[in-house]
Figure 1 (cartoon, chains in turn blue, cyan):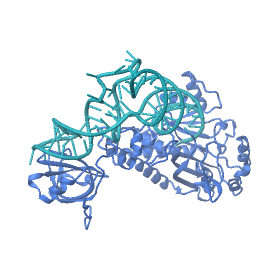
Figure 2 (cartoon, chains in turn brown, blue):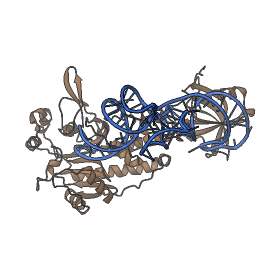
Figure 3 (cartoon, rainbow, N blue to C red):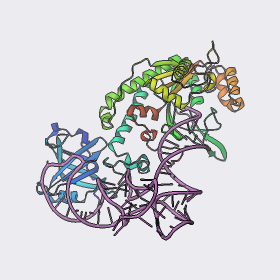
Figure 4 (tube, rainbow, N blue to C red):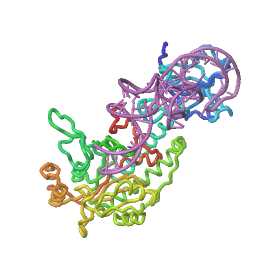
Length: 439
RNA sequence: GCCCAGGUAGUAUAGUUCGGUCUAGUAUAUGCGGCUGUCGCCCGCAGGACCCGGGUCCGAAUCCCGGCCUGGGCGCCA
């Protein structure tokens, strides 16, 4: 087929900007053919762009042969340009349609698409991910990722306003920084290197100079997780703040979450209705439970967790039913948390680490950090880690490391909460998990 | 790593219990034809599938064994 050149055409409106108020105006629209309904004497073409859809109406006897001929060639997913006249009508859901004066075909598409993009025969997540570029054209997915975008925009602007600097730390690192999680190895010019599991150590070092920093970026876990809430590559929203403790950053965190919820609810009303999801903006402050209280609550539900142990998923599911919203868990046993979390001064077996939960999902993890070098070395040893391999990090503690605290939000998990999606891969453009490395 | 479930047209499914009109059904998508107000348009026609390998059997989509792949749960974590 001979494709048309875009020439001098410039988009005048997105589909969403075409309203009954501009009845009679000529508009230039760019987008894709979503659907064609040909009734014989009249043909309806649904044009989709990133903002929505609009109906292009072609009454065959009352339209130029050139336009009719062009419209004969159209198929689903062709990208097209339409110059046409806006017509007010009560025969379409949006109250307008566009009668084309000229149509350009800018690119073709394969006739048999790998998935149904109209939603009549919804494909499984696996088939959808295999055809992800096409899958993302579905309005539900557009809406989901616009919500994610808005969430991040809200968090960023909130943190900027609170005086945080956005930073970027290395993804390629020399040694296994935190212990615990398995890391991916990379060949770094013949030297063994790793993909970072978190920016933890770097952001702590950075508060020495910048005091309040945050970073949004991907991190990597080589765990063979096989659940709906784990990825091998996920986006973390990390903050670290100097001269602050867990209480301070918990307050900041609940404000951030609150602000994100409000913003999404206000700015994404349309997107939320596309995905048919409603949520209530949480009230602050969030409920704060201590680890001991949680164990008590679980005991009453006949779920026994020995003190000192991490809380298993099964127990979290029970807890999530008891507290079906956001809640903090504080005062964890020191040994259940990472080595850099500060033990309480009055009660060292308990630490100043916290988790922010949403139902059974661990959404955020954070705490007051250890700022004394000797104590940090002590904790490293207790965790079976070698202080020698942390010497570059430990040097920061020779240069006046102030008390500090921070946290890390799992962006995809937050998006799940704000969209009601039950599989983390739904809210990840190109998810990486135990079995998926493509596309 | 461990445990459970499952692989049927492009997509989504029925059929598998207890092997036999299954020549594998349906919807949607695709192609062709028809239709002037559709919006999950409608109507007609056509093409299109039993994950791979082995075994049992007169006969396997169906039963057995092995493999591959996928989904889900646990552990670990955000």
